Every structure is written in C-alpha cells, then in structure tokens.
Image (cartoon, rainbow, N blue to C red; front, side, top):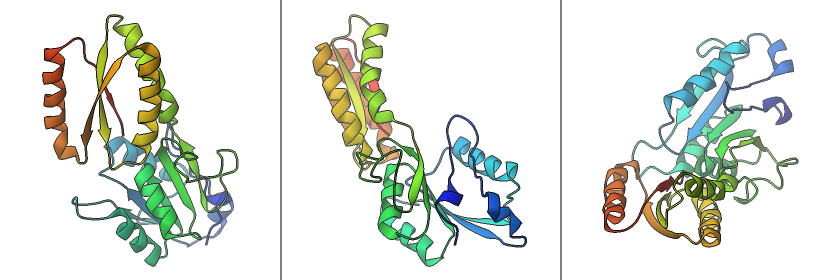
Length: 228
C-alpha cells in the first residue's frame, strides 16, 4: 500500500503530476489506480491523466493498471462505484469533481485519495484545511466557489447595462450550493436579479438553455453562469 504523501497528484492547467519517487524502485510492481468520476470526463482530463503517468514512466498495461469508473446511467450510484474500487483493493483512488471525491471518502479511510476539480474542499467537508488536509485525502482545488462572485462582477464590467442574469445549477453536485451562495451575495451587492435554473443530468441542458433564452427575450439582458 502506498502512503498519502507518496501519492500526491496535482492537476491544473498543465499535465498530471504523479511523483511516486521511491515507488519506482520497486521493479515489476504493477500499480492499480481507481479513476472515479461523477460523469464522463472530458477528453482533456483523461489525456492529462495518461500523459502525466507516461512522463513519469508509468504506462497502462505495463507497470500501471487503471480501473475507470463513472455512472453509465442516471440510476447508477457513485457510492456503489467507489465501493467497487475499494473491493478491488486499488493502490490509489483518483477522484474527479466533488461528488466522486465525497463518494470515495465515504468508501474508505485507508486507500489514498487524490482529488481534482473540487470547488471548495473545506466547505464540502472533505478536508480540515488546504494546508493540512489530514486523513487519506489530498489533491488540488479549482477554487471555483471564490470565483463565482467574481464572475458576476465581470458580467457587470462586460455588460454595464445588465440588470438580471440566469444561473444554471447542477443540483446533484454538492459544490453548486457553495458556488450559488457566493453568486447570490455578489448579485445582491451589485443590485442584480438572478434567475436560477436547475438541472440534474446533461440531457436537461438543451431545455434549460431554451428556458433561459425565453426569459431573456421577455426582459432585459440575460447572461449565464454554469455551476459544475
């Protein structure tokens, strides 16, 4: 079993960093990584993940095996997928986005978990603090909660005459509640009206944008802020 310190991964604008260090000395070992996502990951995420592994000498099918898990339909639960990875006894769980990270944390306190794409790890209850996460979880945050209010301020700079905007929220993602709180606070401070449109699946996106467009035609300028 690898330690959390050995399993630090950072995924930002650049490629994945996977510094196993001492682990590379164990020749012949095939490490098993569980890749857990709350939805089908964008191709750029998977490419960065694989490129980062290859840059450090880890190639799927040779010295590392990756178990990819994400819901294939709306009825498949993340908790079940996380539990499956634990049963497979993977060496590490790579969790993309807040819902999958929460599911992984509930599933195990022993297997190292590396999170990426999490809006607010502290506010979501994932870690005690960013500097000292504690437990078996580490990783990086995109700090999108803090950026939500800034996005509203940017709208006013771009469209000074704006009086209201629509916000698109994924209610299945716990981080959206934190982002919404910041967005609402910024809207109140700037004297803007916000119209919230909720969705649960990607299949609802088209109808949600149609709804927002109809609202925009009935009133003043309307802009959109998506919540991941």
